[in-house]
Length: 271
Image (cartoon, one colour):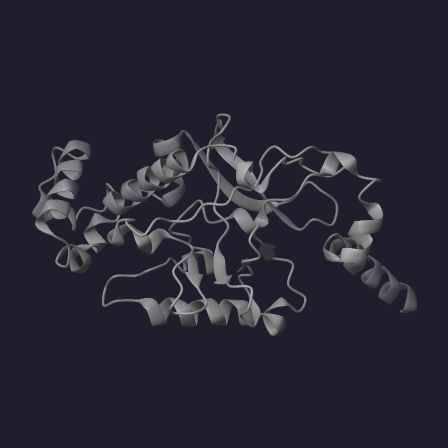
């Protein structure tokens, strides 16, 4: 019994030590290859924000068209110019299907991961990591990822530096700190899950959802919302992806916000 307890504590420490600041400080010089050098915070960009935005719009529009039979309530609230744009896109992708009949056509509905593959040429999913004691990881399940592509998004509740996150952070390995000190809680369990669902319901405007909450479940609508499970590099395996921060612009199409896997903790903050 004591041996089993010690083994359990040792496994927990091996997972936790990478978030224990004193251990990190003492071991920086022992693991130089695990540190990505960035000359200036303002230059920490692998690809431009315009390319990131273009990729998100491309994927989200494809998801919207695929879910077109579910969007009738949202379409009634959109301007005619926006509705006509989606009607035109739908007629191009499904020329033999009449718009009025499309909502009843189930054979044209694809799974989100299939939409991602058709749009970007690859699909990703969560699976058991090949790293020891690393839990789950993210793998390319189909196709090839070109260099400089957006492969995932880090979902979760967005906290400003002055907002409370103590209880959410206890035993939580999914707290991500941005360069400006803003925190993203990507935990899909426990109190973090409850907080996200609450904020998601708070910000909904009728049928218009301001964020996606399906990443908390096994049925994910946005297949990119798996970034919190991307593992860091180790001494044995180099990282093949890196994090990049991106602020969603205020002019982001409101009908596509239903696929954004982030929500601000405070209702007066748009992030």
